[in-house]
Length: 457
Image (cartoon, rainbow, N blue to C red):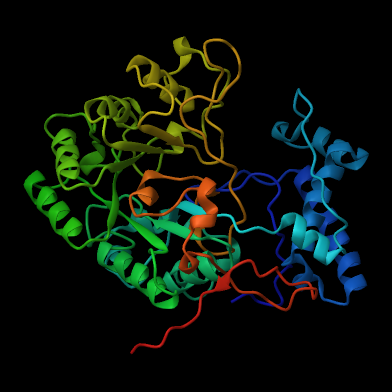
């Protein structure tokens, strides 16, 4: 639960944010200016409405105040001075941007109408940990990876408790508007070193199901596999057993992670292709891989997207999801140049060209918060290959990546409608999080029913 003595949380975070697997760059002076301006506007509106500022910031009016601050930052002399003195990334873009049209923050009903909605929100990459499992003793590098992603305020008796199952369920489904989340894990070779062993991921899925009203699952699960550890036949048998349980939405691999720092390729006929063939034969047609964003002891030679794109040509009836789209925080992306595309998102675009994978085929590149695109051959500027929306608001504790209004095949395979089919979403899915007061009193508008406890029969 939130500490009332903590600073009032902003509806959105200005400046660099993390996808949950790295520490973001520091906020710029412009970002700090936006935060201060939002808090000042929120204070004025909250006083006018007779509510405290924290309550107001949790409302649609708080979002309006934040968007207004972004508008002011685009034209304010104070913000321009901050940009001039800040990080280069804070400098104005070379082309004019847009602006937000929102009501006055104190006009509660108008803000709720303008900013409310009933979107199908699918968070396609989320994490939590099980602090008391063997990984804490067996995988010190993984422990440090997770601890390094936690903010300083989590330095409590057990920092990992702030990203456990209870925190995940609260932040993902009770303190946000997420409809469905996909739960995944960091690199591991099995239950002995996994922050969330698959059996515990199933437990999280079942816990959320008990709190909902039936219908399609609110949590989809990755099964993270490491075929370059141990006997391949044992890995294939484990895939059989996991799928037989009925909980696997997709398989996921970390190809750059392996014993003695040695990775593998998914199109390797000795390791990768047998795994893909088994997934295909088991009916799991969504296969995911982490590419780019180097983590602990990653093998750079196996961290590029080429093998996933090649595999997509071999298995045209499967969907290949390239998480992070090969984005590398140590490399500055520029205009696409196939002659200079050995790293980063451009390497994914080059692989797609090299293997003749057409736009809107069976490869999805999911960057951290980029829109992976380039102009087509005619120069029309239409996005090509993978497109993702801008990440939304993140709760204070959940380790997650980005909330996207997309229809991933993993969801479609489970009977979940896409964004364009919002009216067909089952009532059991139209659930929302903790509403902190009645409408008109600075509360978040009640767009969906909250999760509630369901007594066992």
